[in-house]
Image 1 (tube, rainbow, N blue to C red):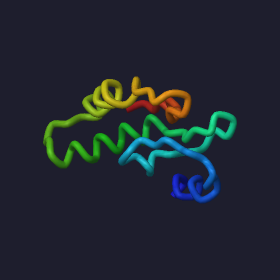
Image 2 (cartoon, rainbow, N blue to C red):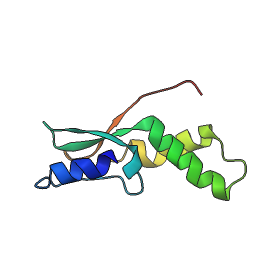
Image 3 (cartoon, rainbow, N blue to C red):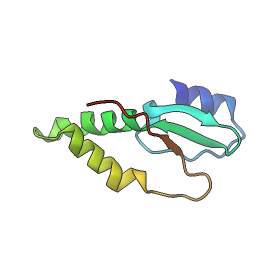
Image 4 (cartoon, one colour):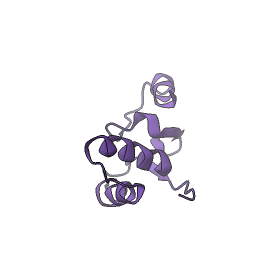
Length: 89
């Protein structure tokens, strides 16, 4: 998993992460010392998890959850980066 490789490589770094989304890490931005996440993978993860409990939970619902709960979150200069790798649904 990319997240584990980054943590092992940059052991001196004080990385902030999005809890529950380790699989969604696609890289590391060394200049700013931040993890880089895939928006598409985050939305997929949200959809997978919520679909288990809600029969009618759509990918649009997952994107809305992402937009309201993750996208605008800020933890200062070490806030993880999210790459908008948009695909056609």
